[in-house]
Amino acid sequence: MLSDRDYMNRGGGRRPRQVNYEENPNMCVYILIAINALVFFTVPPGLDLYRRLALSSMGIKAGMYWQIVSTMFMHGGFMHILFNMWGLYLFGTLIAPHLRTVRFLVLYFLSGICGSLLWLAFNWNSPAYVVGASGALFGILIATAMLEPDRQFIILLFPVPMKAKTLVAIYAVVEILSVQGSSGNVAHLAHVGGLIGGYLYIRLFCSDLIAWEPLGFLFPHQKSRSRSGRGSWTINTPPLYFTGKTEFDFDRHLRDPDAAVTQKELDYLLDKVSREGINSLSEAEMATLRKAREQMRQR
Image (cartoon, rainbow, N blue to C red; front, side):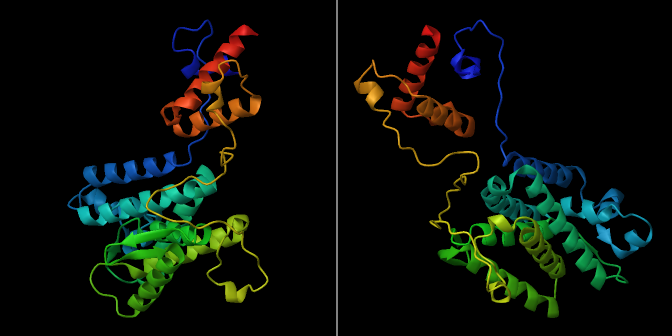
């Protein structure tokens, strides 16, 4: 009920606070970023613990199987973690509302594990080790292209609007070609493994959300969902727990103080407050919400 909401009882209500916040799928993205940052600042590369958490064939042979997962939270330098966490924030907060918390976390860890396993398969007898959340990030990247293919981004090296599916296609080609002539400390195989893991998860377990099929030539009879693809840097939450465009004329409550607030108007406003906070309401919407509170008190 309206009177049970915390923001409707700030003046001192007779009931104890009973606040039910709807799930915020992006919260898991923020938590992952926080964990990565915490590990980065508390486990520097010079420590023995760093080597025990980083993935290597020697570690796996010694029974340190946790490295397949722990390496996803390790990074080799500030720029490494900065770019990975920026990508996780940018793309993660875009698709987490589509997948919700559980499926997003499965995508993240599955992509990272696939990246670790593919790298390990080709470096089984190598003394090298690999760190980074790049495998998980590339899984999120391919998921973004499949769920939001027409979302547009601007990257620094190519400062023109580029659709997500185009961006992923370029990244995929670059990474696959880089595997042949890998140099430096970039684990391209982990990136490719993350792409494969992310694609398979979305393809097999989230097919109802697919708006673009990267391998559509192999599945000519599959119809992707149609969805508007106006893209920008602004991350808009898809309509999973928000009903969408408003058809209500809330200004009528400013013009006519005696106009009654309908149940649909109230539901719309409460959903918006749950999703975006009470400060997101316009003056007319706030007036409507106050009027609804008065209506409830008069019943």
